[in-house]
Image (tube, rainbow, N blue to C red; front, side):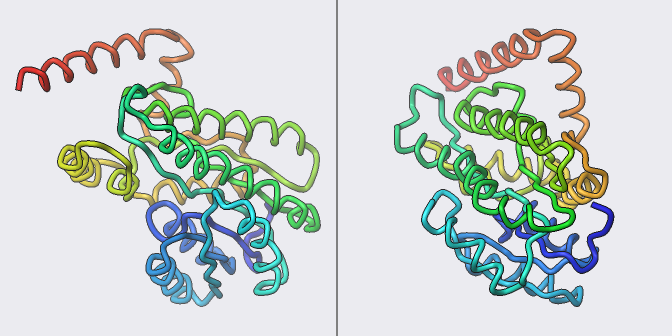
Length: 274
């Protein structure tokens, strides 16, 4: 997009983490922002941050997995802002269990948010984006979009699906006024682990503490998202571990999985011994 000033952006999962940071940065670049989340308290805080930049924020309580609600959302945003130029499909959840221990309800939940949420956003907002002289869709995938991780099988599956969908959309919309970007962050200090479904809450809390201390801040991902919108990039890798994994997978497709499998077996043995 040649300019962001005066545009309208829709951001899902805007109540915290990458969604909040992206909303605030887009506002600093001159966008009004429609904030979408199931967490009303969270998007109120995000709205205050957008308002502090001098731009307008609207609040939209919505579960991205709810097809009927997402079908209503574009007209709701139009009534508030009159246009939609940027869509950031960011909302996401995870399940911290081995696949054998997943329930079908776990799978319905994560596929509903991580995959159907992106599908709903793209499907229902694309007609509005088509009306504008320039527009952009950003879909949040992950390092897990091209690397299968133990205890994260469903998360990896949904993020790989988001990557593939984004690539297909980019191809179909190539040459039009609508750009598409798939974003692949590595470890990011967000609340996704704390909100995950897992059997060992104590272990999850420890991992979340460690992640929040060592992972990159969501503002770094937000800056790459805005960079990608302005430059119409198809794919953006964020973080050194993501770039390293991408190259390892290209050069040695099986090696990263052998390393992960060895580490996972050692973890299981330690747990059994204790």
